[in-house]
Length: 412
Image 1 (cartoon, rainbow, N blue to C red):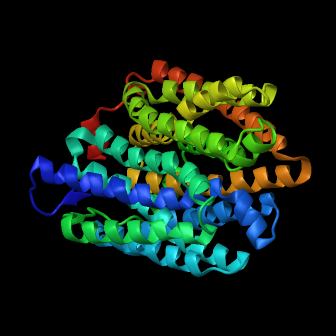
Image 2 (image 1 turned 90 degrees about the vertical axis):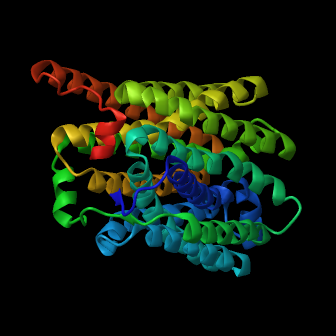
């Protein structure tokens, strides 16, 4: 991707911030139900495990959308693509506000999935095209928006649902979506796609063992995270016996650490993306292990949540940079790799929520944390194996394992 006309650095950074703001809005509304699951469950007369489907549906629709949007839009100006996807957030919020059944809510959440998958796939590449000389920083800003959405969604949902109906909370998405849509129309510059993504590009990515392994790591890390995180509110209420106010505070602390840790994770990933992913998996396993072993002790639970938040903060940017590095070294198109990364990421959010919900329905909220820990342990072992394979390749092929600079990453 590239700009049609030269722009000042200030104008380009402003455009990156607007893309990050769009990412924030979409993720905020996507994860808003996490803080409201018990209320949604009671209001719509479904189990808490079934209520988790409102997260699953959004993520799975996004997973299908992510590779289809690049195929459908071809070389269309990404400014119009991003603004149109933001408008779908407004439509989804309207549908959620008027939803009077669980089925109606699922339809609203499916519309949101259409927007989320396409925006993730196009937004990050558009941001790096705007700031090619600072690609890692531009990517971190977009992921910062995603992290901030995670920061605020669950605690805000948990707090507001104590004062209003759950569907009224979605008015936030309506107002926020309209604001971002107008700003994007007015201030985003034209962003031209150099080439259209084709099915052949996706095939090339899927034929690469290293890239498939990275994508498998994304699947394991995200499934593990959301199998537990989707049900963190009932876990804290039922196992830790935290009050609703305490739950909101804990979720806010989790989110703030995730937001701030995202930028640190971006810096580490720029130096060694593989090491970042390995350390991330270790933090996941230790953090969740503490929750399982000492779930009744609030101080230990807080410590576990801190480690969990640090792990999640580095996951999106760490795995994305690793994917870009491996794709570039293998000579595969980064735009196709990014679309598939978005697809498997979103599909894994939905799958994590689904299997976590099945565990909750079968054996209670504690089983969701146990399942998450098992999956994340497999992710840790996979990351160690991939790290060893890349080191062996680096020794056998000079320069094969070296990281890419911001400029090289953007040039892809």
